[in-house]
Length: 84
Image (cartoon, rainbow, N blue to C red; front, side, top):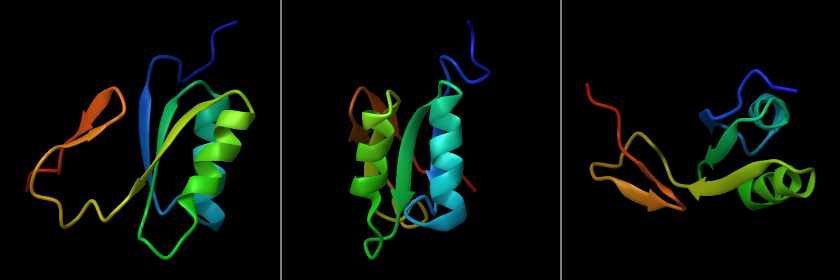
């Protein structure tokens, strides 16, 4: 049975707590490969681990997407900063 987000990648900012964490779990449940993104103060490793334990695919990306100026290798794909 196909899920709505199969073969998609979701970068969820603010995914270390509350609404962002819930969204990350929902996207993973729908089949997305999830990048759990948050500032250093929140526990994204635990969120990514919980997603993987429930059968999803997730990585933790501990840094601000706003301040990065160069691509970052993250698992099997590259995260690139947004262009203005």
